[in-house]
Structures are given as structure tokens and as C-alpha cells.
Length: 251
Ligand code: SF4
Image 1: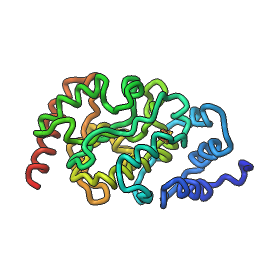
Image 2: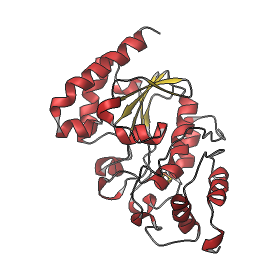
Image 3: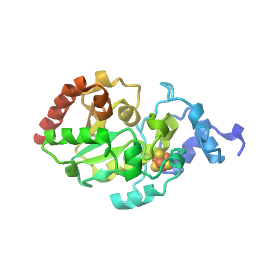
């Protein structure tokens, strides 16, 4: 494949082939990086030289991957073999998600860290332990909810996923949401908000404000890793848990 033939339309066709039915726009930069992967680029696939930018947000708005499997376990088995992006090369395993397949509430974070990469389960490290202290405020146990991330392989050095990684990985999450059909989603941090709903959100401004994803109420709050760095903000998280609980209890 020659680079001159790699166009946003070509990449959109590629994404459709892997499960993304409609992509509203694919920037030339994202096209270039994904094309590098298709050409069998090196370990970094050209991704390392592309920084996340406001010009190339990854939004799933309008993305509707087909549910080729109807159960979460079948989807997990499929995802565990995924090698669609360079992140898999530096990760020990795909960290799919954990929890109740019929959860009323889904938490969505950014991506696995070292502990999660080791254990194959999201939010099991220090940030996960902090999240575990928030869930009882909802009158729920960790086993009652479902927990997943935007990208399912650990980004090197715990950096945030770059747009092309999210573009390729987020269909797994969308299919998880489609199978679980939670009543509500709580987004943990700006990266989860950006990759699920698009735009360049500021979490300090958007936390606690209801949004919507395909008819599902979505409440963003801080990522527990951020709270570990700045515990003074945790009162705001407690407010957000109250907000979530109020709406869950009212249903
Ligand atoms: S991060 Fe997502 S898209 Fe990339 S290899 Fe892992 S599961 Fe596949």
C-alpha cells in the first residue's frame, strides 16, 4: 500500500471493517498513523510521534459497531485476542473489564496501569482501591457495578491514550455498553469524557453535570488517581456519588 493512497476515507473503511460502522470524521493525521499500522510499521506504529490534540478528538458519537456477539463473555474472548493497535505490543494482556454483566451502573476510566496490566482487571491498584471506597456511597458493592476503560491495553508509562489508540479501541467499549445496557454511566476523568463523548472537556468544569450517551445518562467525575494526587477534591466526588445515588434510587 502506498502512502499516497492512504486517505481518511480509506481509514474510515478500515474502521468499518473492524466494527465501526460510521465515523463522522477521520483526520489526516489519524489516517496516517493507522495506515502505518496497516503497512506493518515498527513497534510504535508511528503513534509515538503523534500527540493528542484538540484538532483530532476521538468521539464515538455516531459510531455504532455491530454486536456480532450477544454475550459479554463472547466479546471478552474476542477482545483478549485483539492486536489492532501498538498498545498491545507493550502490554502483558488485554484488560477487558470486570463486574456484573447486568449492572445498573458502569464506571469507565482511562486505561490499565501497571497493577491492572499484571492482574488483567481494571482498577485494582491504588486508584482502584480509592474507587472501591466510593462505590458503597451508592449503596452498591464493587460486584454490583461494571468497570471498564477507554483503552484495554496499558499505555506505556501510564500516559493518556492518543487519539488513534482510542479510535481503534473504543468500539470494544461501545459493544460492552451495548450488551450491559446500564441505566447510568459514571465517567472517571477527562480522558474518559473526551473519548466517549468527544470535544476537549475540562473535568473541573464538567464533573457533576449530567450528559447523555445514546440515551443513557452519563455523569463525569474525577479519576481516582487524580484524587490520590489532590485529596482536597474528593468532597466533589462525594457530591457526584450522591447525585448518582439519587438518580439510581429514583428509578
Ligand atoms: S488497546 Fe484496544 S485496540 Fe489496542 S490492542 Fe489493546 S484491545 Fe486492541
